[in-house]
Length: 127
Image (cartoon, rainbow, N blue to C red; front, side):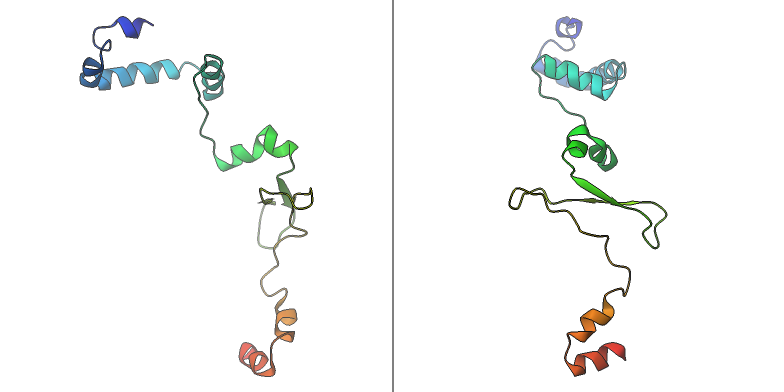
């Protein structure tokens, strides 16, 4: 409220001329609380606001976890941590499709794929 009565910021033109000072004041004020606190306060006041989240933060959000939007695969070859996979954002016959298993290891299905190829393809692929 006090910024609105400050002559440096009271009008559009003076705000533009004093943009750097206004930016510092706003950033200092915002630093006084967390992004989540500001999001709540601004939304409560009718100002649309939302935090910019990292992907791990998004995956940890309650709406994502409660809707079962991800599945985890432990012990993946070549990975030192679990693999988290996001499901499609749609439903099929009332169910959300999730991967049935982890991605295949390198060459895991090679023999199955080669078995479906014509003889020339098999020879070429094995050469």
